[in-house]
Image (cartoon, rainbow, N blue to C red; front, side):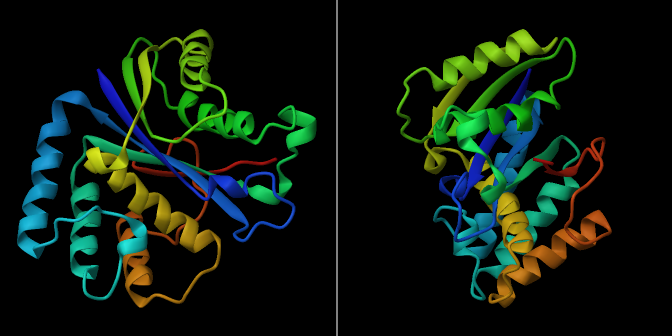
Length: 225
């Protein structure tokens, strides 16, 4: 059984003609269920080391907390049981009227499908956890579950929403995905955030950019719309 923990960055920008940030990002970490306890313990030890017990979020990266976030990046890359994938969306190029029935929420979940589907392995079982958001349509998660099961040879046991405050792994996604969004949107105002991005680039061996599909540890899919 594998767990997938997902989060999103600037989803409200999808389909806007003049978005504040050009790129929206959806991301997730894939982890074998048997390894979840270990990585949670590793992150808890890191909290104690740095005396940092609040919610882990990209927006909280600051000079006073940067050493914690640099160590968090190290933990992610040193643990072979966890991997990250994100989809980068050029928000202004999304044609909601033509392809998504003028429904921004529908388009949002179609991009979640694109994020998850291509990394579902044949004959493997998955539980998927999305950061909670209020939807207009109550069946969005059950529909995503059904479509993933019909389209793949994997078995998706469930797709459910949980509060990010309850999941340190969704919080980890927020940091990794936040770094990608910061880079793609051309921000350079925070030395602490740039240091975290540099640490990621040290581990992957190149600047943050779109990767090939089979890049398995840190995969960045910039969708061609």
